[in-house]
Length: 296
Image 1 (cartoon, one colour):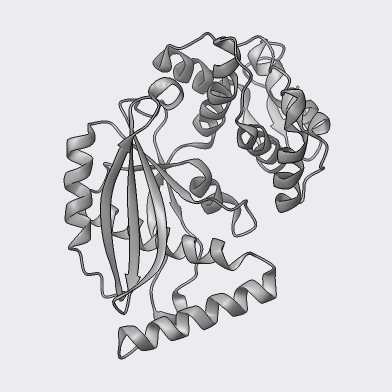
Image 2 (cartoon, helix red, strand yellow):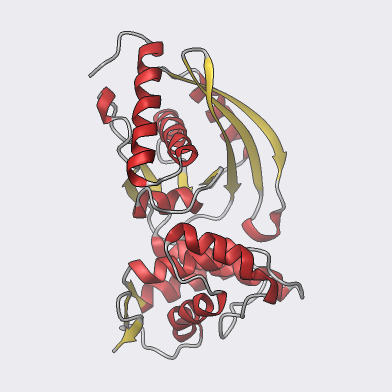
């Protein structure tokens, strides 16, 4: 149903999200941020279609559903530059989609370019009924085109009670998502430092447990990603995580219902990736997420 005012909509929305959190065990803050992400993405796609690619944790939310780990950030990619992205953000602020939301967007800072390429951070406040509803961070990376065509994915259906459909967004293909995770996870090792990106390992473990893959597509995505970034060559095997990762990994694993031991997580990620990194399987091989093996 449509609501007569922003105030009535906000009251109904907050009740719905609270009930959903109680029924599913999904943290309320995660639901609120997903609503804010969805409404912001709707505006960005409206003002700049085909110029955004959804990446990172929110992209996995779109694939997996509400049970994925919480994230404070929305990661987006573009092929142009900061000036063009900022102009599109300014346009998005003025868009009225009839969904009772308004957005205030502020550029914050440039980010470390070592791992992700040139990137800029924006702070976004989502407002409903002239009051802040949620604060989110948007990180926009520039320059590296996806090696595969983006896939159109829909977000979680959280606003259908108000006749608002989830947004359909161009999203990083899963093979390239894995490739970028592997690149980020191994970048510190290549520079002689330990990685601090526990989330990359946990995401690789989760992806390997849920999705089938073709060896040729994954191998091609890895090659293209490492070539484009140019920071270090792909390793022959996945490096083991630092010894101190145990507590952080256990926390993330509990949130996702995975085995808590980081050693088991590493073994499962290595079983998935080492045959591809080391060319132990042919391009025709396929990954079985249930059996956790490549065949033939």
